[in-house]
Amino acid sequence: MNRDEAWNIVCEFVKNDSLRRHMLAVEACMVAYADKFNEDRERWAVAALLHDFDWEIHPAAPDHPMQGEPILRDRGVDEEIRRAILSHANYSGVPRVSLLEHALFACDELSGFLTACSYVKPGRSIFEVDAASVKRKLKDKAFARTVSREDIVNGAQEFGMNLDEHIAFCIEAMKARAPELGLAGTAQEAKA
Image (cartoon, rainbow, N blue to C red):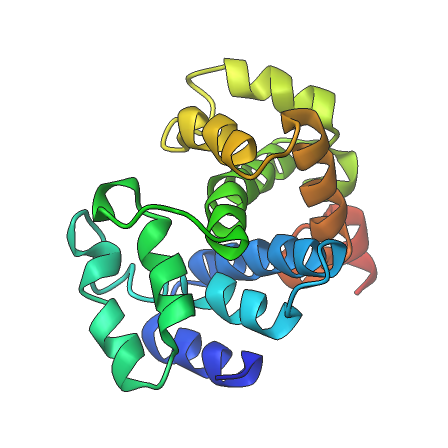
């Protein structure tokens, strides 16, 4: 499966623009890491895009992502990618062992948190976000309370990344695709 085919599945199953942008944000981080580690960027993009494709039809554990996996299998998504998607849910019973699996888990919650951090900046822009401000927001339990801080910290650790470096890396990856993610900011949007 290629990236365009994965995006078609996303568009078929996901109608919420915020959820689509979340998957694109995870993809931005994953592709940047694929390049960093000389991995297959197309495979990493497919895993990132499809990791939450079933959220609107199965929005709760344990259905997500287990109930979505057979749909992906029937659509021709290979086992390595399906396994990575299953492993991004701690409750799935599928341990994370590959670099792809660790990257997906590490980028998932963090990309959502970075989006939330962008939205509270004056210009609503990822360009206003830095690792230090993100670390401060991580300590504020009332901010973006549905985002698991434990998953963010453990994700970086399992991935073998220093948390500050991981945050900074993902910020840069998301900056590169800011307009597509809706994170270019109000000044940029006014120019468009």
